[in-house]
Image: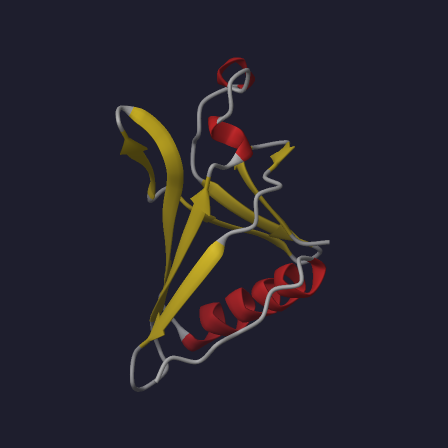
Length: 114
């Protein structure tokens, strides 16, 4: 299983739109996750705890970023954006293994930019 959490123990069921960039030499990269109307912003969730980061969990363990922000429209949170920085080829490989599991479980597909 591969899932994403913003509060430990509470799985996010809204599927992220993920954008990847990678340096020319392949050693570094950035993954930007955007969740439109995620569960964590729904009413009743505020008593579950604070968003402390984005946790990518699978059978290999956990990847984490604290670079998480809410996007507001008319003063109300509508989306969450999180940025995961990949700092080495080893981290890239590990991240891609997570994404492959997450994509397979959530019927996501990869579209290469032109």
